[in-house]
View 1 (cartoon, one colour):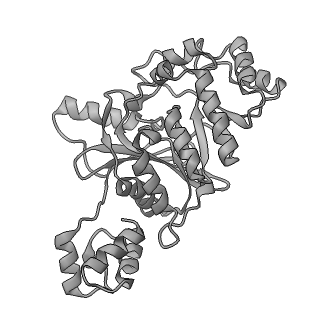
View 2 (cartoon, one colour):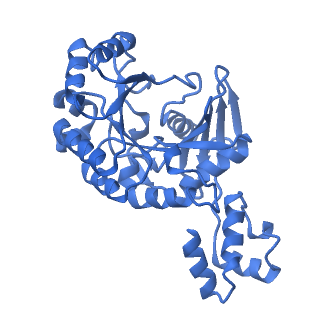
View 3 (cartoon, helix red, strand yellow):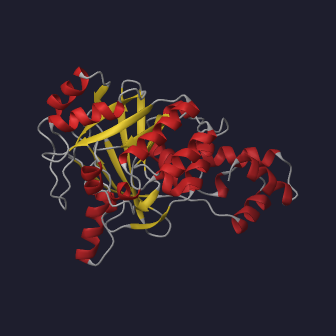
Length: 349
């Protein structure tokens, strides 16, 4: 619940308004039981326990990179479903990449998250829990959030918007919108809807190809949208919000990494405020697509044509840090053994 919803709830119970703020703060400090809320009377705690539930994910598996300390969590939710979060350390603070769905229906060829399709949407609480319990388990304060884990955020639009409201609350974790990035494969109607909200977050568009033939091969969503329509939507987003867009581009060997495609990309972005974030592809065992060997050459060609380019620092390469890989392996082990993976298992690679 938002603080406003919680205030209305306590009013209906005949309780004073300040109870809402008390409970809201307890929940955003990681309370998993009403019994922990020591400033509430015992009768009220018992009453709340009979009326409400508190979500609490369990650490199903934890992998810590020996290379850079990146930590990947596989969380088991209340219904037994699993999702992933990744904690990454940077000079500017700690960033957590979180999931918004169990599985994904977008079908991108290079992503492990979509194998097996979408199971269900996450709730706002299940999204918030990934931030909160990652912070509690790691002992590292979270300063930045990336919605780029399992699932398509704009395919779970209302939930994601409520999550943003919760995580931005001054009475909660109070993480500002400018410290949050949202990645989409390009659901144009939802991008327009997001623009109207005027949020100060960073929008990242997973482009991955500058032409319809290649992008449709990699990303089925493009078959109903097309690159030009997507770029028109991105331009409208900038005109409405004044916020530059980050264009994600995973370089795939022999697929989207040629000089000609770099030139096409530069032409596509000409006059469009934003920058390109080149991503060295992570290997996915089930996919024939392999990482490009032309990252530096592709970057230089774009820069010579006036495009602002960054290359994403590769983190957690030794711990299945690519979206969906850890969940996929856990599902395979479960199927092979006919049992659940062991609880609270930690691996240090």
